[in-house]
Length: 161
Image 1: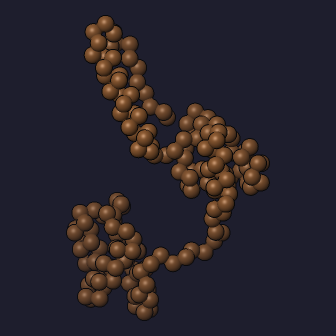
Image 2: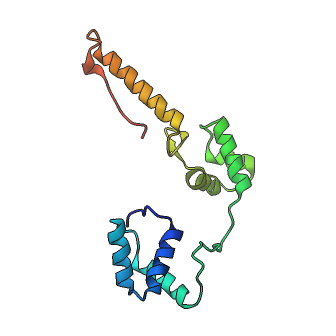
Image 3: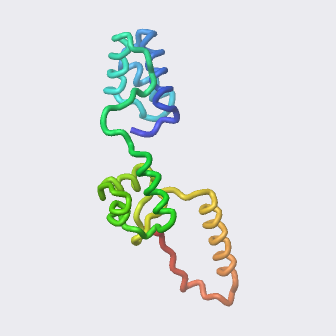
């Protein structure tokens, strides 16, 4: 399955539209996937939504899910601590805030969008400023390489992982 260029809500509306035209599940899937040129609709999801439409439930919005709600206060505290010190361990953050170690780790990965690289928590994706800084550094390295006095055979490159 590939990511759709449309939101789940928009895909559900399309499923409803095609279902209202008495299209079969296979036709709905084929129409959506060929139109979008991406395999983004699974048969089980189409069956689920058609079943709800047949039960006269036409709301295509995402319904609230059961389970434990997110602790936004703890997430904010974890984010603040990591902003101040990216080298803090999940255990020390958990002790300071008073929550479980696993909760801190999950918050960092899922809610805040960070990953651990060389004992430091960094954002999963770069900000615009960070991308611009990478471009500036790359241009500066190219200028150094163009200098004939600098031996280009000693340059070592790598990534952060």
